[in-house]
Structure formats: structure tokens, C-alpha cells
Length: 320
Image 1 (cartoon, rainbow, N blue to C red):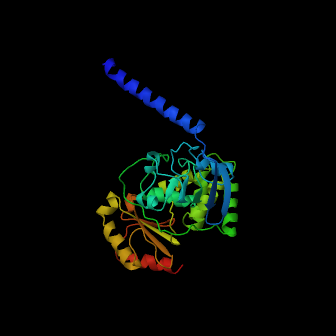
Image 2: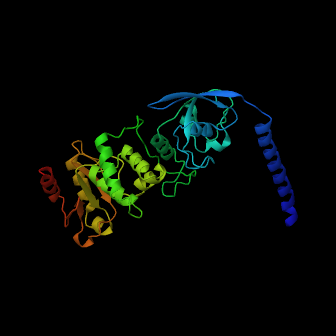
């Protein structure tokens, strides 16, 4: 049995030696001279010159260009995405897992994998745009600790829009919330809970500000925000209507109650009315089986429901 693995070990050793020699040759024998890098973001544009042969990520960091690199340049995360308008060479196999067809057509590359061998013109997208792109293209599993895998999951659709900017007033609100939990162990959950309660959802620029103020990777903040059902990345209504669809409530007719709310509010489960007054959701269990069928509206519990009571309940909150 051991003899079967000896040839494999020899071949692996030879390939490793060849790879090492190629790397050394590229570093010691090849000189790319001076290369010009022109980079652009939504708000800035800059040009500088570097000595060719280094990675684009290293060149950017050396020149004080802010770009997310939580993997430390090992190419294991997919966050340091840039769009190349010119230069950069062919895409490497180590990039393909992180780049969708649409991104490839747009010239998107990983800065940690692109080697500076010529003049480059690049655009650095907003970090939250990269995060959303990876969710949409299913290049990671949000239930894990942001370890990127290939997995068949339903698409999560995001609007293609320019990232929002955080207003001064909102920045002050976030700073106040964060400061109150500065000496708390594991502060992220209470911070996001208070922000979610204030805004009725978690605005993207606020998540980015929280990440910066707590010195936490945006990936971790975003993972928490998308993992818990209590949080929402979309604006929600003043009144959150949660209809229980658990076994006890289902047997007592909760499906009819939900249908009545959808008809009365003219929205479907998971949607919000145009006047931002109501958000309707079907939930698994509220824990009030003795009151089935039951629902909650914010902190209020309404039990022993009938279809006839639906309009009456809605009218009470419409008048508030």
C-alpha cells in the first residue's frame, strides 16, 4: 500500500520544487520596471508609480489606499475586488471561485492576485457592494463564519444602486449607541438591536459605520445582520404584524387570518405598505399556543383571532 503513495509523493515534490523555482525566477530574474497605477473610487481619483513585480494589493496598501483585505493578502476571502479598465493580465484559477460571469465581463479582479507588470487603470467599488455581490452569486454561506464555498441556494436579489452615504445626524446617532456599549463584552448584538429599533431596520451605511467605529470587519457585522430574523436590511413599517403559522395556530386557521391581512393591507407576507405604516410577516411560533390563532403587532399580543376581527385590529393601529 505504501508503494502506491511513493510516486505521488515524488511527483508532488517535483511540482512543488518547480513552483518554487518559478517564483524565485520571477522575483530575481525578471524586472518589470516602473509601472503607473491610476485608481478611482466613487469619491476620489489618484495616480502613483510603483516598481513592478509586486501584487496590486500590496501596491495599494503601501500607498495608503484603503481596500479591504481581511485575509491578509492570502486570497482566501474575495473582498479585495477591483475593476480593471486596462492591464492586469489573464484571470487566475485562484480568482475564479470569487468572480461571477457578470463581474468578469466588467473586468473585476482580486487585488491580491493581480501582479503589477504594466500600467494599470482600476476602479475600487464600495465594500458593501462587494459583500452584496457575493451574497447574490452564492459564493459563501451566510450561516457560517464567512467561509466561502460553492453551494446551491436561492438567489438573494439586491438592487443595483449607488451605495448610500451616512448623513451627519445618523452618524451622531450611531456614535452615541456604540459609545454606550464600548465597555460591554460582545457588544455587536445590543448595538444592532438598538439601531434596528431606532430605524426599524439596519441601513447599509449604518452597518458600515458600526464596523468602522467598533473596529470589526464589515463581513462579521453583515453576517450577524443577515443571520437573525429579528433584523432587516429593508425599511419596515411603524407596526410589525407577525402572524403565527405554527402547528396550533395553523390548525385553528392562521392561514385564513394571514390571507385576510394581505387583502386588507393590499400587500403580501414579507412586504410593507406604501405609507410605511404596516409590515406583514408570517412567523413560525410566537409561543402563545393557548391563544391560537395569535399574532403580535410590535409588543402587543392579539389572540383567539377570527377573520372578522382583522379589519377591526387594523383600524385600531391605523388611527394611531
